[in-house]
Image 1 (cartoon, one colour):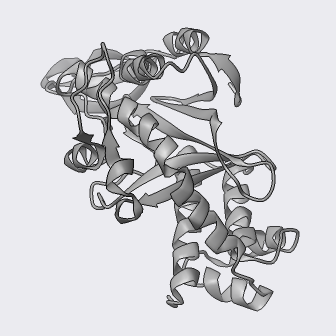
Image 2 (cartoon, rainbow, N blue to C red; image 1 turned 180 degrees about the vertical axis):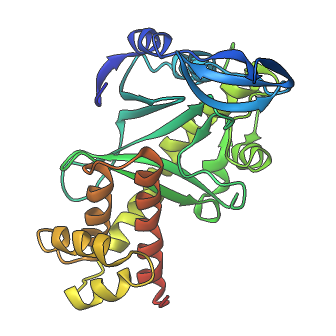
Length: 300
């Protein structure tokens, strides 16, 4: 399913139809290996785990995300669903949360994935090592580029970070979102109270509204930084090899000659090439690495 406008209830129906995995015995030379099980999709063996591994179906993993959308009164969104054997991706953006990019705008949202092969549901770009920033998924309307946009917590004001109580909901007053995400390392874990998973996604949605100004500052800083082709080549050194670097430069020649033009060249390559989803995410993250390097005038 490509990115399209959709009702959340219809999106839930699509998620319900995602392929399921099953658990089967591991048999070697006619004997069942005790303490192990195979996770399969149809007849394909995805991975072998110990019998302590808990298989989570995609529909169950994404249930908290869909519940949070409804709780946030998001009846209609833009969304895309994509799956490969054993893994599914759900991207959701909100047309009413738009950052001005000097063109048609960048809609904010998030991208989550779930794996039958041992990885818990997670937001794209999340890291257990860096809890000083959030990362939102951005969808640039002018070129249908996806991007992962960082928001540094230190740039948020106290008023920005404090979330008010949702009347009739499951939330407490003045819950600091960054503390919750810091404890979770940016991830939604399968173990724990289901309501906590919904709360985590809900708070991320609420934070998007409060992050528009900070994201715009980031975009403006890139648009205001003129960049020659020679500077672009230098900024790519140590980040990409010759082949990817040449593809980025070819796209940069057709973009505005600014850091934002180079940033968009990388995200364009990520969004419109035949790469795996993890590799696309790595390219999107690399775009931020390049931007931060240029903006801080630190050479690799």
